[in-house]
Length: 360
Image (cartoon, rainbow, N blue to C red; front, side):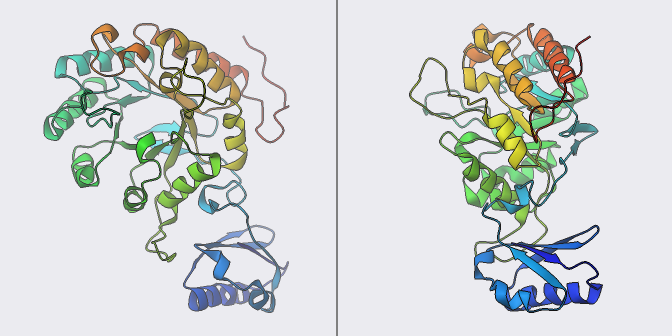
């Protein structure tokens, strides 16, 4: 819900509205002050009687927002959010590449893959300790302590920030103590609310993958869980974690020739609906390294802020998703993707028809 204060409304009148919302409904407010003041209500605003607010002096209008993902919505936060990951900017006009092995298998494999990713131009390094797999017989990663030691070695060898997937809440403190710079929530965990609520209490950036069967609203609601700091009773328990990065990977569909069905139209649509940085995953959507390159270009051309993909020093020997991992071609993919991003830098997300800068 959004409350528009009338032009000339006093700070005292604005505060009275905020006080009533807090006292009567136990909800938190956020204000934007420009030519007029706008008050956004966080939490379950369906309990609010707009008639009681309209009767207060200085209130011009009360608007209910249909989307449930207010914190992630561009309707409330017009400008692109840019997130700083150890000096690397994600979002806005930046194109950022996350890359590295699908899983840490051994120290040698991890360091070799990390160095390959760095030489290719990766900005943030994948250092995945735990793996959530379909079958219990698939490779699921190393023992936690050893895996985090190797993740730290990968970071030290390359000087790059690291991202790692968290699949068990009990491991959160260990991840933070090990210096993991970005925590990833995988597709299988994308709607696991206890995990999302716990991540709302930390400041570390979060990459939120798109769930296998999620529509856009469900995905952005999951982001709002992390951002809102709202407990299960709809009350504020903190400021939430604003450092959320979306990552699209497609959904399970009728077609099985590719691993997941990736709707390219989702990229500009999500950019229109949300202010959050948006990555895409060409490795997991394509499922085949022969397709990854073109799919990556398509995501960037559609407006993604970057992509996350699998880079392995020896894909044919990989214990996890070797079929979709790229090798030395990673450097070409990143270089060409940056060229596409630069060429289309003038294309806005609002109309999709602004002029593009000519390619050099």
